[in-house]
Structure formats: structure tokens, C-alpha cells
Image 1 (tube, rainbow, N blue to C red):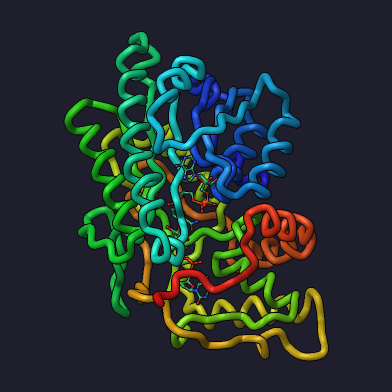
Image 2: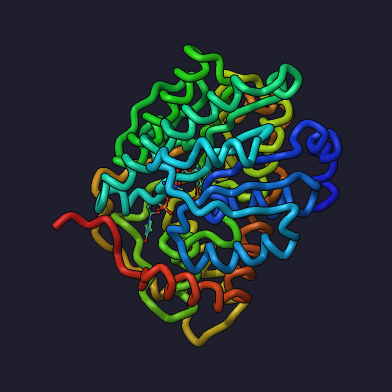
Length: 371
Ligand code: NAD
Ligand code: DAU
């Protein structure tokens, strides 16, 4: 695994180009995986803007980042919806590249409280774009020619697929949830900053990620956590909705390659090529748990079909041909191994789960129902 990662990305060359890296949302699931990778593999200085929404997760991850030393890492506690002080943050961090991951990310929560999604995902992206452009325009020629703004987006902006077909870079935008509508709006803002102002931005549209440190309200952690606590595992509707699953470390490979070799103005679709219905995925995880932590009854006896998510997208599936052709990315982690690795991580890190749930106030309740 390690070897393959090294072969895919030339960290020495990466570090030569990008010595100071500004990341937003780095205390979240994908952002923290990106920061761990950069801290482990490079000597770049990382600045991480996060509003600490997942307090427990954030704090524990934060401490681990600081273990690499203050000269390599700094957290900036800031909500991107506030423009004030962003200019100062840019002047102090003086980045060679920006990875923008900060967003409200849960569809169910966007059904409950859409306003937060507009503020973080749309206004937050706008504020970051304005400040990134001012910073870019101030850079000397050589640093300017290397500078990139990477906007980390989702396949959900394309809406929902039927039983056949795949999303690719030519797919029309047709967001169907408040979450995906705000992500789509932010993608359009980013493209317009490229087209109008020449900000060298790129957009990634990625499928569902899984791996360590994903917050317990998302499907895969929820299945694992509920199962080992003998709680019902809620599956929305008939369980036949399909998602395309990608291991988070594969996503990080894609982002690093995009930073290094991606073309400004481009969108890249990133997918795992592992489509599973929710019920099928749930049974796979229950079967693995039956072997890893045997109990009298199979964990699948805990599966409970519950009311569907309002406006539930039926299927996502991604064609990742362009990113392979242009920058040589493809997923390298096998689903069977990576899902097992993920389950084992949750089994070994129940303290983390308790901690983030306690600190965030999330008690495992159903989100996104309409009264
Ligand atoms: P996450 O919810 O785990 O993390 C998001 C982080 O952003 C959190 O730490 C949060 O505190 C921070 N944040 C949110 N709003 C902020 C604001 N206004 N100011 C500062 N910080 C703020 O999400 P994730 O799963 O790691 O997703 C990261 C990004 O990747 C998101 O933009 C999401 O849309 C995108 N994405 C996620 C997936 C997936 O499957 N998880 C797939 C494709 C794309
Ligand atoms: O496709 C990329 C997107 O994937 C990202 O942009 C989002 O940030 C990320 O949260 C994810 O969105 P989904 O809505 O697909 O993920 P979630 O884990 O919430 O749900 C996955 C599927 O499982 C979906 O069809 C709804 C269903 N589900 C979810 C939960 C939480 C259940 O059946 N039961 C549940 O309890």
C-alpha cells in the first residue's frame, strides 16, 4: 500500500512547488486524511482553517497534527462565512496552494437546516475565492505560475442516475438536495472566478468516500457503530439506492495529483467504480463484523427499514476516464480490503467515537426528517 502511494506521487517535487499549503475543513473526515498525508510525506507548512464544527473529532485530530510540530502545522479557528480577518489569514499564511474542503457535508442535515449550508458552502466559498484571488494577484511571477485553488466537490451536483449510465465531466448539473444545490452553486462560483478573473482553480467531483474518522452520522460509520452497540441499523426506504464507494486515501491521491498535474479550469470526476446498494453494503459490513467480532446472532438481524430520506437520490456512479488519461489517477485500494481496514479502525477506536459523539452532541438520532 505504502509503496503504491509513493510511486503515484513524487513528494519531493510536490514539496518543491508547494511549501506553504492552506487547507480548509482539515478537521473533517477527508481534510484530516489529506493533512495526515502531507505531514507524513512532506515538510510543507500546513495552515488549516476550520470552524471546529465536530468539536470532539477536531480536538483529537488537532492534537495529533500538532504532534508534528508547530513549525509544520497551524490550526486557524475561523468560520468562512465571516469575511473579516480572512485577508489577515492569507497574508500570514501566504499559501502556494489552497485546498478548499470546508463545507457542511451531510444531506440529512441540509434537509433540517439548509441555512447553514448556504452560509458555509456558498458564502464561505465566495469569501475564500475573493481572498484567494487578491492573494494570487499579489504573488511574484514564479509563485503565481505554480499557484492553484482546488475546490473539492461532489458527484451529487449531477443529481440522480437511473439504473444505467455514469456521471462524467460532461454531465449536466441537476442538484436535487439543499446540500447538493449549495455545492453546485459553489462549483459555479469557482468556475466563474477562473473564467472572469483568471484564478487558476480546479474542481473535483467525487463519489462517496469511506475510511477512518468519518463522522458517525454517515452511513458506513453508522452501520458499524450501531451494530457493535446492538442498536437497530436504519436503512432508508427499500435499501436499493446505490452509491459508488471510494476509499478516502484514493481520494487523497487524486487531490495531490490534481494539485501537481491538473489543468486550471478543469473539472475531474473521481469515483471508486464500486457501486453497491445500501442494503447490500450493509450486509457486507454485517458479515465482516460477524467474523471480526462474533456474537450469538448475526449483526444483519439488526437491520431495520425506516422511512425514506425526502428526495432521496437513487443512484450515483462515476466514470473516471478523464482523470486517468490526463493525470494518471486511478483507485488502487481494493474495496474488500479497505472496508475491512475501515471496520477494524472503528473497532479499535471506540473511544474516538464516544468522544466525538459526546463533544458534538450527536446521539445517533435520525436526521433529516420532515415534520
Ligand atoms: P466533514 O463534514 O467530515 O468535514 C467538513 C469540515 O469542514 C469540518 O471539519 C467542518 O468543521 C468544516 N467546516 C464546515 N463549514 C465551515 C465553515 N463555514 N468554515 C470553516 N470550516 C467549516 O466533511 P468531509 O466528508 O470531510 O467532506 C469534505 C469535503 O469533501 C466537502 O466539501 C464535501 O462536500 C466533499 N465531498 C465529500 C465526500 C464524502 O463522501 N464524504 C465525497 C465527495 C465530496
Ligand atoms: O456522493 C458524495 C456524497 O456522499 C458527499 O458529497 C456527501 O458529503 C456525503 O455525505 C455522501 O452523501 P450521501 O447522502 O450519499 O451519504 P450518506 O452516508 O448520508 O448516505 C449514503 C446512503 O445511505 C444514502 O443513500 C442514504 C442512505 N442512508 C444513510 C444513513 C445516514 C441510510 O439508508 N441510512 C442511514 O442511516
